Length: 389
Image (cartoon, rainbow, N blue to C red; front, side, top):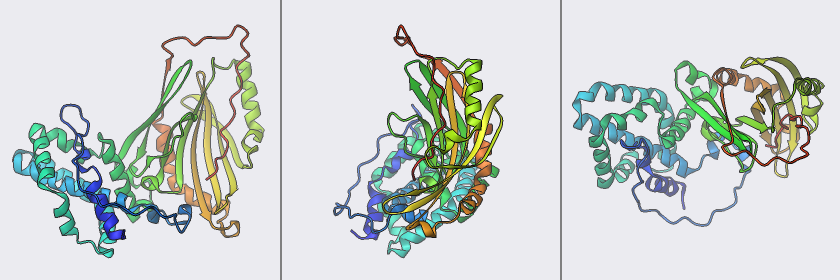
């Protein structure tokens, strides 16, 4: 299938009405069914994705879904104005906000579609069918303000947050200056929960628009992971949480911090500590460490720079990590650790925002876990090892 057809298929087959909040529950209704074109069996990529510029890692279907979402919102705003002229000011505000923050990225993606032979006007007509139009009308008639809200705030509906992150990231200004979203007030809430036999820890924070949910393997110690550039960038933010049965005693804490200060735990997996200091976060003693590492994989090599802070909260050991990577086909062509670190500095305001808005909530297990008669003393948590990427 040609790139043009894959893009068109993405527009037709992705759930565009999933972006309309149901007035009753604040959740998207079931998507309309649309015809799809069978695809030929997937071929292995000619180039390792990590070696491509991040924009080239985005699949045509994903680009098509982003455009389809915008065309659905366009029609929705037209219908709100038609059915509820008294909401003209709110429609105008939504239109201006969408054009300001998402217009440049939308233009970039439409340019890719046009370059590959797509007629944008015809594509929009194909997508906004009578059925789609009818469902939009029904949602707006049921509660126009509830339907309009997520289009104005870029929040509430998870699918819309994902689309907004990708469109926002395609703006070259955002790529150069990830803190732009913070200054413009375009931030969203993030969070995740870690649960063990003794209870749970909920981690809440804020990140600017432009980050997408990253992989979180089942059974891992990850509370949540976010990936820059709408999920396709070279930077990740990860919160790790490891629970103990009981909090460490003061003596065990002193031993823990003494072990951390040797830097040895951070270097056991091949990383090199370039900086280590102690400070306080959430009024708790914390370590701030910078680690550099080079990974050699079968098809490429990566240089990693990792900044992480580690602290104890009740019975939990928590690590907040910002990692930036650069990948090349061979190690000799990799940028230096200093160059990767310099590139990562543009994310400093993102790191600062996340730590400043960090909120932790603990909850004991509803049913006490069975405890052994001769239980060992709680073990000392170890720092998170530098991952392969």
